[in-house]
Image 1: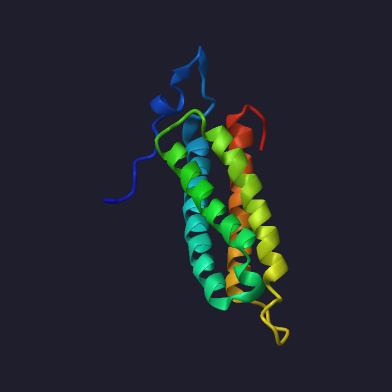
Image 2: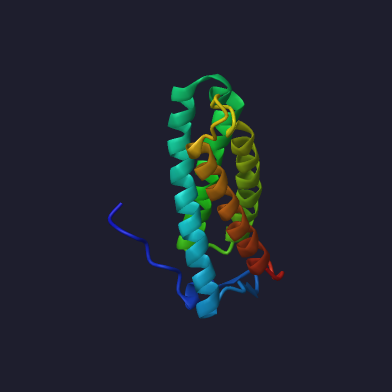
Amino acid sequence: MTGPEPMPTTATATAPTAGKAAPMGGTMARGRMRECIDNCRDCETICEETISHCLNKGGAHAQPDFVLLLADCAVICRTSARFMIHGSLHHVHTCGACAKVCDACADDCESLMGATGGGREDDIMRKCADMCRTCAKSCAKMAATAGGGSA
């Protein structure tokens, strides 16, 4: 990768498809989209880092279903960011799915935060849970806004 990708312009964000225009346009909408892209990228990164942490930690942290959920979360975050970056009118769908997967991942991270022993909270699991929640909220707003709802 050679640097940040350009944001979709109002022209690409309102390009017609099947006779309809996407309701993304204006500075505020582009700002929300940029924030969502950044949240998705940050969430992808922390989920990937958390996979390594969990595999090294072992035990409950390394359960296959949980590690796969972290991987799924990273992939859907990357996919959602890419859809928004290239101005896809279908980002509403990926953002909706991303919100659900991020919430599920945050739930599982939170359930494992206290599994470090000694009554200490696992800081990496906390960071992952917090970022997943942030991304889920951002993607849910983007999906609702792009879908014609209100966020």
